[in-house]
Image 1 (cartoon, one colour):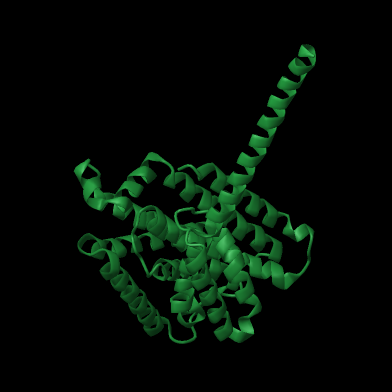
Image 2 (cartoon, rainbow, N blue to C red):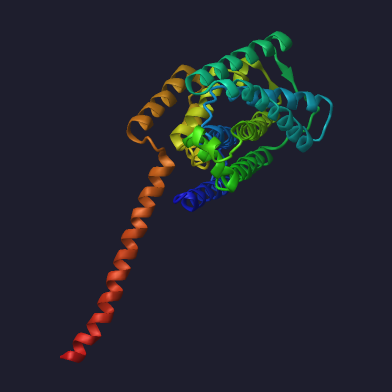
Length: 329
């Protein structure tokens, strides 16, 4: 709780900085890469809401992400307006929260992690069996946004989605989730309906994962089981982003995405090295910065503010004492 305002302010600063980036560069590859940085920042924030805030170990967030992607394409083929298609796909993806919730009733910890990972593998095989290796295209006649429209749409979706998740995590609802995370038995003993709050958490998390997946399909105008939609790499990319940024911070995901997803885009031609790079980054963060980069930033900022306030207080005391000394003389 003590870092909530600092997390919020730091996150807003990062998003504001990204919002003015197009005024300083016209590099289309960089701006295109930043679209996916924003989308995976939302992915990471949505996963962090379930794991960092509620303590639900879901290693298959890619199921909701992929379901949102595929649902969007079907909405697009029916010629729904883009906003309706994205929100409709996200609503459909939120239903996967029920799929996660069923095993969470009877399992937890490592067992739940294994089950959710198996669900991801099953979802990928089902998608491949139904759409084939070529995937599904949204159609060339569907609305095609410009680069700037795509940039600000992805950035806006990531910011407002992350903001909603952040505010929820520090609401009374979020406090109950944290109580459930810290001690599920104790939470039950004080009247918290653990099963309901797990379901609510997974549905909310899946909704925003669905938005991330839907917008990904929107901007590439295609979805494909082998394009990483249900892939292990895509799935763990969002998790790595959240861990590197800082779990339970929500806004840390934008920092994690900048550190992981942006370099990965430049290493696209060397996909193996991209995986190695962000895997190594996660190992280093877990070993040396276990609380995540955002927590480190806020800790340093807090120490700087305390040091500055102490200096100002010392100067004020000196100014008060000095005149009285002169009068005495």
